[in-house]
Length: 464
Ligand SMILES: *Cc1c(COP(=O)(O)O)cnc(C)c1O
Image (tube, rainbow, N blue to C red; front, side):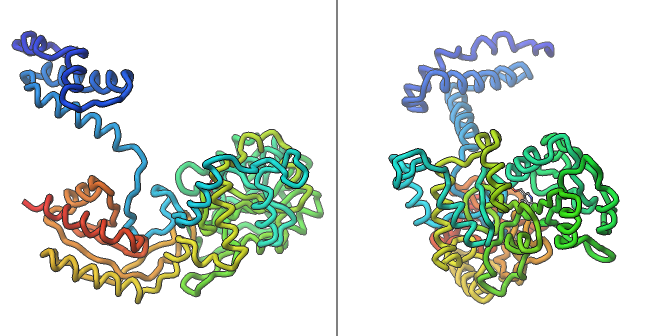
């Protein structure tokens, strides 16, 4: 420990003890009914900081300052608590901001199904134990033409579950062009290794031919894994083996073909705004034994993963102990059920994420102009500029969505950004150099007033 400054001993003695500060904080209403463990933790943290301050040569702060420090400590602790935020980035499936937003009535149904009890694993026809997620998986199978489907907690779990079940201790062939990292922490080689499968890389980053796969097959090969390059594109001189050719090869050697699709598209695009992506049904039609996908990407549901495929393989997965580890909870299944109901009813366009993706540039422009005029009445100058949003969530990386952005030029963009983040309903915009951009595509209409007050407050507090 550093030697204390000469006057620090007397100053150190002025720092209140834990009990004293606890009583003071209670008297001032800083604490109400919080449990002891919580109050003591925060008081100790505050006092430690004050001690460090005094040891570095400062004098002991006044009582009021100590109490403010405690309040700040509480705020700082609570800032990591999840709360609603306004996503003004224009990235619809923003992984850090929760991916697909869920519709209000989907959530109302979810509450109904979670409030009391539900037939989660209870068959109402027989009065016997039922299958978890039976309706959802049957509906998903009908929608995609799969024989059967199984829902787990996310797509990473779907992939891991399938690899562990069918390839543990055996080789999995994968193209070097598909040894990818998708988003935070999903690296195909790592998942493969953790599943106990042995990675057998073939080809090169840009070119992998069917002959490369063919040469790699040996007695210990169990699976060919094809991974959809969902978050980047390879351009130029590239070549990859088709699912059809891979299936022929797999059949010849009696091994399995898995297709990790990730993005989760299951119906034709409701609009022409985005190019068509590979769909689950394409993967199945073209020969994959199993196709894995996320529920909270293009599907527009809660976090989850679905494995689609032939009944005999899905049954093996469902009976593997890992399914017990990865099975989804009631909240997930309740909201997924309502999302899938929309697909069955031909109303998937009304899912919030799809409604956002379907907004035309003209609609965004009209909203942006209105917002700009409103800012003007508060003395804030903004300009409207052509720009781009994105689908996000590691989907369609090469296909930005045409949009119109509200551009702001505060005195200090960094300070302004911080103020927006510290707003009661935090706002996350985009920043480029010294300018801040708002894309209304991802701002729900009901949140526009909140956004307006956040921007005006941040402006007022960030101008000298
Ligand atoms: C996103 C993605 C995953 C991971 O999905 P999570 O649901 O986030 O676990 C896996 N594979 C591919 C191809 C993906 O795009």
